[in-house]
Length: 400
Image (cartoon, rainbow, N blue to C red; front, side, top):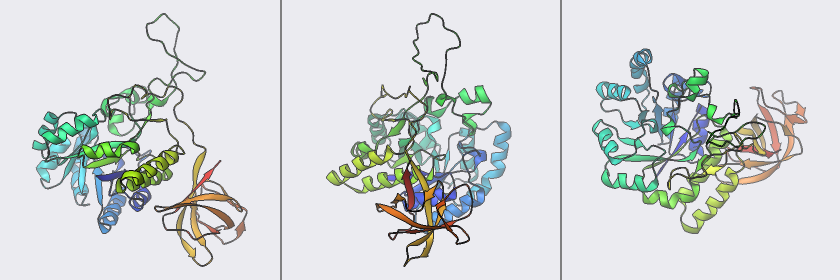
């Protein structure tokens, strides 16, 4: 199965490939369900990303998955040639008008049907195949048993299935809450996630529905996060073509950790896979999460909602990323710092192939002046001497 990772910017795209993804999905804010607040891609970045991916013999899928009104659809028609000339391996779309326009103007362009189109049955898959769709990203409400039957009935179309990431309370992500409360439409890429807010009763009255709440209210709409790392054997039996990780607005720490363990587990078998899965669950617990669920994979999980809080804060954080080797002999590296790193401290160095504890021996600022600590919030690089050699694509993790 192809492992498909999210990319919210060009840097995350490169890390996703380094940690084992075979493909990534990304998009420019104007026509993607991730707007400008979280999506940092420009058209120039997408072009660089596609060129970078193709040099690695990997793929980039560009999202044009909004549901546009007339004015936006007119903009899309003008913009489409500029997307096609970038050479994406596929375009992810959900709106029939957008799909029809691509088919009409560029009949050879591969199109993947977005999960927003909520394709749940083999009849729908057959319909979309006739419209020229080459891959369907199944609705998240599809069980593995249903997915296997779809593949049996329509074997000559690719299917993709979400395996990890945030879940949406609304059917296939078609939510109206954000538009109602904030005039920010989830279907236009501007979701403000009111489902994660604490809710309170406005007045106490007799009612048949009982809401449990604390001093912050109740998180009745808040879904847990999806995690199917333990069920790769069952996923493989469905003959699904691609596994998709959610999270274009997630951190680099999230991207590297999740992609790494799914990639390793997919390559392993038997006891080796089981060992990786156990390790993965331990590392996933260190990420900020809403607790984990199997979602709809085996039928609706009755414990799919997290009523206690919007998000479980992690005690672990990413503190930096290795940019390049400054002095290999002395283990001196150029580092982009995200959170505080102190001289003399021990931190975890995570790379695509290993994980090890390293000591921060010396820190220098961008002027090569010795410092007691390094801090983020600046575009200036830091130079840090460690007690061990480090690999390319290393990120640094600390507890605290």
